[in-house]
Length: 330
Image 1: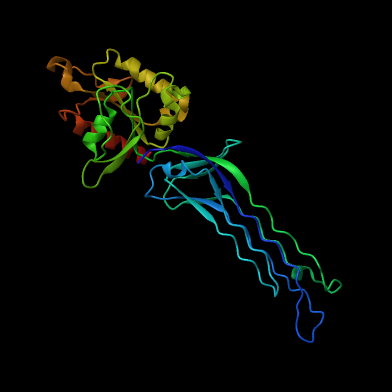
Image 2: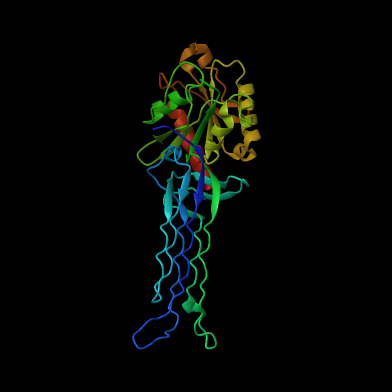
């Protein structure tokens, strides 16, 4: 299934039904009282987060949603039927913005959450509502109200515990494929990963976490270079970041500073998340260099790993889960 994390759609609520002008007609009662019923309310447009969805792809080719109109009122004080609501299913983690003002309308973080985006117009009142002792035969009713209509932008932000961050070809997808059942596309060239991937990682029978692998970042990613701004939003909800750096990188400290700078430029709160560094592909180093890897980089705990041989993976996961538990307590 194609991964789509942003769409714009037009949503229109239904018009309320008109109130009815009617008078009771009974045998031997030539001038019966008013009995016009009320119009039904217009249907609303609702978004609902559903656990079985992971992409906005189903909305890519449908740009307009319109709820049903309310029925007009009828005689004998019969109210019109309410218009049908329209429910738009979306993945958990979807934010809905007013496309014109940019204001956040709702944030559906959990499955089962729902929110009314536009409300249907209220039904008009029938003439039976306007009868008084001095006005016993009102010959008017009120029309139904118009339904709201706006353009909205839906943005999906993945819900994960751990975000894997690094330059292109740093080994993020390979690591995810080794520690989880996820099967991201992997190749030995940059930008193999073009969409975020999720995987469930189990430390033991009782401890598990969701890892998110986002496409590689480059300098200027926070400003949209390489679609980085689209990818960075997928780690906004993570609790912890793992920075993956190729062990053959001659200046891992500089690389980490670059990654941190891009995170800071995109959203300063990302730097508040706990983080750990993984130097990848250590199976390519000779034993001497492998034994002299740094224990920290720029103050962050550092682990050497090899997804190919499995070396250091257990230790990295143990440290990651330990940091997660620490974030739960703080």
